[in-house]
Amino acid sequence: MSRLAAEPLYQQLASQLAQRIASGELAPGSRLPTEPELMAEHGVSRITVRQAIALLVRNGQVITRRGKGTFVSAPMMRHDLGALRGFYDALREQGLEPQTELLEFSPSAGRADPALPEGLDLPVRLRRLYSLDGQPFAVVEAWLPAGAASLGAGRAERLTVYEIIERFLGERVAAADVAIRCEAAPPRIAAALRLPRGSAVLRMERRSATLAGRVLEFMRIHIVPERYEFRLRVPGPLEIANSVRQSGVAGGAPRREPG
Image (tube, rainbow, N blue to C red; front, top):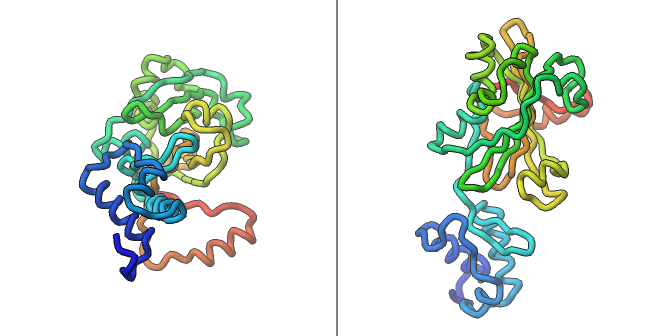
C-alpha cells in the first residue's frame, strides 16, 4: 500500500483483501482479521479499515455479523424468474444440494390461517426449513388444495411443492405470479433462520395456477438476503419509471409473471 498512489488507501486495502478472497487464502465462511489486526498489519487508521470493509460489503464479497465480526461471503445462490421452476429445483440446477427439514404438515391449518390471502381455498399447509452446509437460509410455507391432505408427512417431507401438485394431485402448473420484497423478519422466521430479531429478509410470494386460472398453490418464502438473488431477463427496455408511476396510481406493487 502506498500513500503516494492516486487510489485512496481504503480502496487499496479493499483490493488486497479481495485478492486474498479470490485466491482462496480467505475461504468462504472464514473470518476476516479484526479491525486492530488490519490496522497493525497495514499501518492504516480505523476509518480506513472500516471504509475498506464497507466497500467489500457493497460488492457482496463479505458480510458483517453484529458482535461476531466480518466473514467472507459464501457463493451466491440465484433464482431465474424467467422460467417456471420450483425453489428446490432452482438450487439443484446450480449444483447445490440443500438440506430440507419438514417443520409442519397440517391437512387443515389453512382453513383459518390469516396469512393466506382471502379467497383462496387451500386448506393444506406445510412448512420447510432449507439449509446449506448446516446454515439455514430459507423458510418455505406452502398452502395446497384439499386433495393434498392424504399426502401424509412422510411424502410431504420428500416431495417438492410442484412434485406434490404434478405427481400426487395430477395437476399441471401453467403460470405463476411472483412478488418479491424486503421486510423485517417475523420473530418465528428470525428464530428459524438464526437471525437477530428485526433482521431484513427477502420475502417471495408465488401463486401457481392452471391454464384456466384455478389456483393450485400459494407459497411464501423468507430468505436470508446475503446469499440469494433473483434474476429476470426481459425483452427491450425495462420501463421502471412507468411501472413506478402506474404502481402509485393503482396503489399496489407491480407483479411479473415468469415464463
